[in-house]
Length: 107
Image (cartoon, rainbow, N blue to C red; front, top):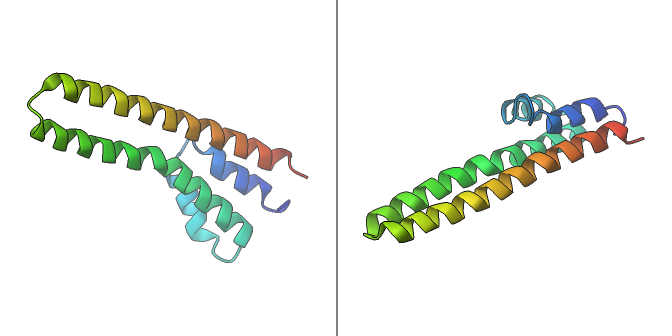
């Protein structure tokens, strides 16, 4: 792990500068290095989680907006889904920073 700690850390800390693309590139290029490959894969999926949830929530809002004729219920659903998405995105962001720092200070 000590040989790969910088690349592993950058895979997680890339949430600041290149969230999904950098871990994907590292994940694809490190097939022969299991430690870096595993860390980049986890970072990739952690960075992609809010995006996938956002797309699913937009689909849910679209379907319920077409089915319900009540804008109040659709509005409350949108507020709740946006709050859930904000919490997940913030958690993903903070966990990526924590894991990146953990890889940097690990012995």
